[in-house]
Length: 293
Figure 1 (cartoon, rainbow, N blue to C red):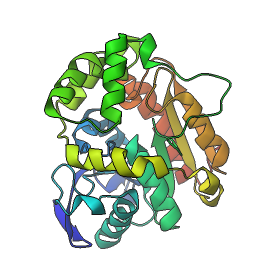
Figure 2: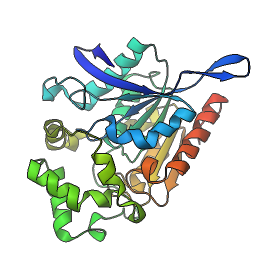
Figure 3: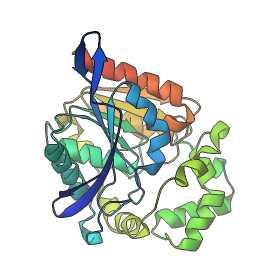
Figure 4: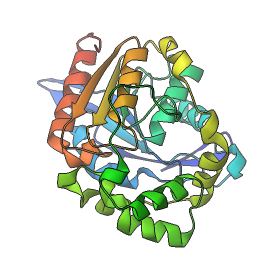
């Protein structure tokens, strides 16, 4: 399904019903709007791990502008701010009021911008494997290291990619030598299966990491985000490390932190039962009028 928002065709898909039969009545369930990472990927890799959330909620998966099945506007418009504005506009057009916004990795950057730029657009946040800044963290507990999991050559390859080299040759080498380390040691098969389900727009990724990433830092504004938030981290995640999750949980006024001990960057697919249980409890507290933290 597609909706034109700010002149761009935004693709979205829905898993689960909005209404559920409870006894003799129809009860409205919460809506989770799921935002993929990258920037540059699409919703495909989220689907296996998040589909189970349809037991608790209606899940709306979105391909952000310039990515996946959405339209291709000029890459200079593919900023975190414009992506956040698109999500707010899409929810408005679809009549989705105050959803729970799930943001994974770079999708968490978009979710945070949404909460800051459109207060009230998100009723709650689930921030998974993400961060409030890309600058080095001042933390006594050093983050997991890619160098501890792979060869020096693979670590250098990852550094080259995040530096803006998204050529086909680099991406093929990345999939072979770096991608398995995105997961915890017991789940090295997971990233390959997830990446096979997603398309990658190197132009959007190159624009973000080459131009926009150095300026990304919302830490000074976290206190402005007053909605409940669940911050999910994988103990073995070197991309969105636990230390970054602790910064988020400490800065957001109504946040709680959950660590998945066997996971890396994809706890929703590495430990799906535990992840769905944690999200289910979070949604139940929201439904009962409770708050996170």
